[in-house]
Length: 135
Ligand SMILES: [Cu+2]
Image: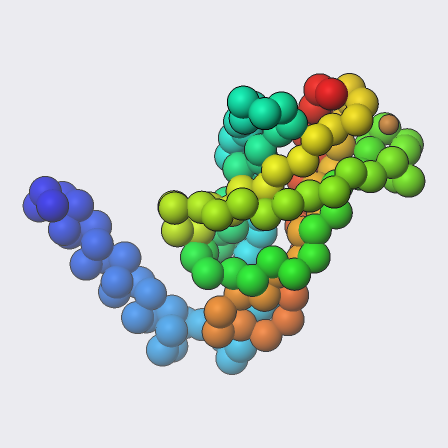
C-alpha cells in the first residue's frame, strides 16, 4: 500500500467513524443508497450480464453484502411494461458489485428494478436502471 493510499484509507476510516458517531443523523436514510449500472457482459452462451454497483450516494463508495430480494426486468421504458424476462443473480467476486443475467427477447429499452436490504440499515433500497439492450 502506497503512502498516499494509506493516508486515503486512514482518511476514509476517519470519515466513516465521524459519520457513525456525530455527523450521521439518527438512523441513516435508506434513500442514501442506490444501484448504478457499471457495465455489461455478453456471456458465451448468449444473453446479457448486467454489472451493477450499490453505492452510498454521498461519496460513491460501494456497499457490499446487500440482500437483493426483488428483481424485475421489463420493457416499461418502451411502453411494454408487461414484457418481462426472468433475471438471475450471479455470484460476484467484487464487494459492492452485483451481477444479473437475463436473456432479452427484444431490442429496445429495458428496465431493471431492484429491491434490496442493506446490512445495518432499516428499510429497502429500490432502484430502477434503464438501459438499451439487444436480443
Ligand atoms: Cu418489447
